[in-house]
Image (cartoon, rainbow, N blue to C red; front, side, top):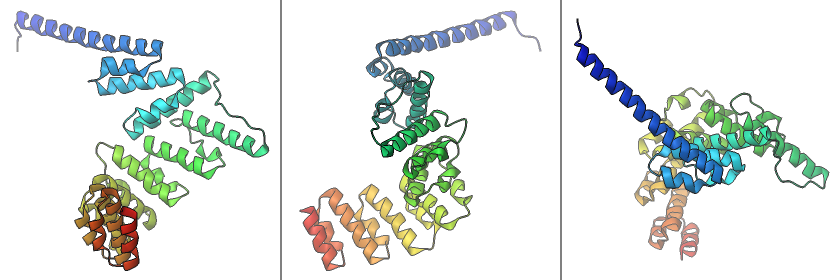
Length: 281
């Protein structure tokens, strides 16, 4: 099949124009980014990239890297993975430039904490390359480090955290952050308690009552319904809870959030009901 020479020239011209516009577009954001880094001010990112989310986040992270400012990661990055990616970049930048955290250690105990802090920062800086989290002796910091690695690298590793609450929070942050959370992650877990934690985390992030059907255990199912009821501030969802004590807690929690003492009327236990009235009033 022969193509008209004029058509080929037109298509070639359109292609060149598209490439040119893309280069101009990319160059423009590159200039804004460099200016934000030069000024060391995230407000530049907001001013020139307000309608371009991914470019704005990249700008925030670049400013955080040059200022070694962790609060930028905590306060500005909206998605969990972005925040942790930002932390990794800042810690990596600190080590590359030999910038140490401000920390005074007059005693042996504080010296151990300083060592753990440095191990934590080094592990986060190298989070994609190696698992150095287990070098941290403080189990809370070790769990936090392993949680960050799990969310950024492999969510199945949430199951390996030391504390069960951290397991739930790890899966929850992953599901909340993921654009397309897949329950197959929970299904691949063999330990029943960890699998339940995974499903509970999914219920908190999906806010769908059907996600509570993963278990026949009434205690776990009650906790699942309670999560969704509290998030939606929907009292009627507490009615699905078959354990009176859990149902009462569900009503009490929503009454506190909504500051509505009439919700306390649903509580079966008189002592818990009166406590609810006193907390709300």
